[in-house]
Length: 148
Image (cartoon, rainbow, N blue to C red; front, side, top):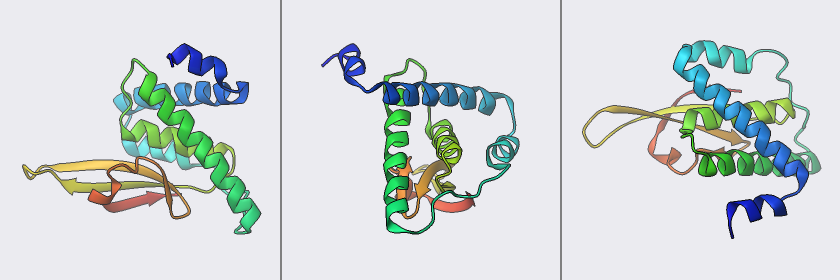
C-alpha cells in the first residue's frame, strides 16, 4: 500500500496528531541544533506537570491508549519524513504531546560505551513501566537522568 493510500485511510484525528508530531519533531530538531540541551529540557518540563490520570485502572488504560497513539504519530512521521529524527527529538516530541494531554510520562537519558570505547547516549520515553518511544535499544544503556 502506498503512503498516500495509508494517509487517506486514517481517521482525521490521527492525521492531526501526526501533524502535531511533525511540527514538534521539526521544532525540537532545530532547537537541539541551536540551544543547550539543559535549556530545552527546562522549557519542555516547566509549568504545571500534574498528571490528569490517577492510578485507577480505567484511567491507566486511557493513558496507555493515548500513549500508543502518540507513539504511532511520532514513529509514523519519523519513518516517512525526508528529515531524519534521531531519538532525542522523538522523545521530546512524545513527552510534550503526552504532557499536553496530562498523561504522566518520564523522559530517560542513558549512556553506554560503543565497541570502540566511545561514550554514546540514547533517550527514551516511558509511561508507567512501558517504553513508548526509543525502546528499541534502551536496554543497552544505563539511565543517568530522568525528567517527569
